[in-house]
Image (cartoon, rainbow, N blue to C red; front, side, top):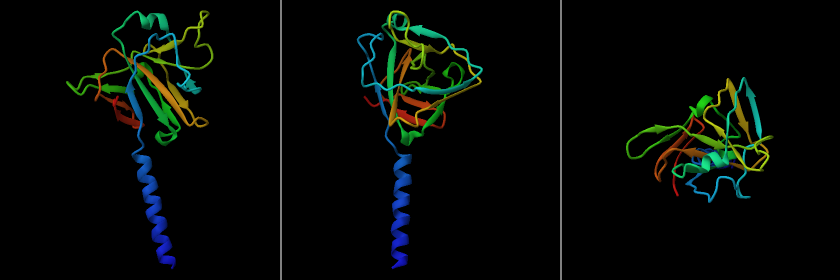
Length: 172
């Protein structure tokens, strides 16, 4: 009887580990009517720990001026991990084109913490001009967070990679 229960526990644990490794991540192209309006359904990261960081922001009006930007929405869950890092110039976030293998990094990311709104109540975007020694993003108290990544180019089937934290294709 003990031997059977140990086998069942081992099968259950193995299945659970496998399910975490294959956690699906919503990754879609997203075209808002205006970058100045953020839907209520988007939950942005709120807990950030950084060291020696210089941040540069773009206003939503600056992003709206270029209608050719492509936006990718990633919905990260706890199964992906509760902490990820950003490196200077978003060098650890890559889009790999399925057509020619070109590697692009985000131009900007919609960000949320104190002071992300200007006097006109418009959203601001963390620009790829930012530099950091260490930048950790945590969402341990949230079921999921959205990353809204602005690229010069993005298409269905392109791959998004964040270090060893995440690798997924743009599905929608």
